[in-house]
Image (tube, rainbow over all chains, first blue to last red; front, side, top):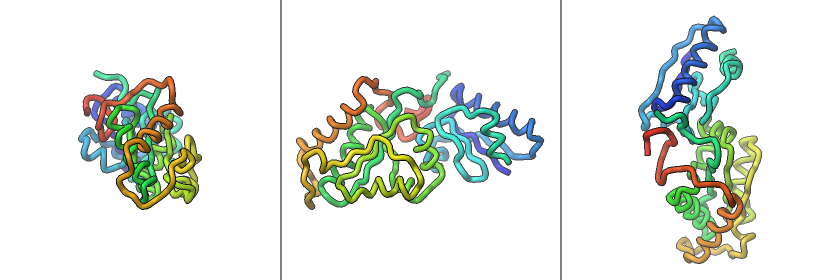
Length: 76
Length: 141
């Protein structure tokens, strides 16, 4: 499983990464988490805003910090 | 460091049919100018039509959006229906008293009519975006 957190580094982007890592830890799943901060690379995903979360190529959340439960539902 | 990349209040996504008629081009130009003026931000209806996950999720998570169709054919409306997305704030330009024709450079007065109509729909909402940003995020535009 591959998870990307899209965002250039604002507080909400960092918080989103924390939530994703916490959800992963609680789920006991093994996944690679990448932070994507390059604006051109972010634009490729067609997201209207950041932070955004991409799981195995599918955008799951845009412009907000997801809850840990939301993230866990994407991992199932 | 900014707390918000995209302020949750007052964020308006603008989606236009951008069709091949005067009213289609009015939808496009209104979206362009409203973006440049900081009213909101134009997104890509084609991306929604292609069911690309970034565009679909962006529509689902957008606090506010406006969908502009030029005429009653309703291509933008149909794209939303096909994508299973609820239609919000739908504008049909021919319903504003502008007749459809083949002029791809419609007059300024008609463009102002469309823009003013959309602005009135969101009256009282403060502008949120820096002009011309491609991706809404802190420090990018």
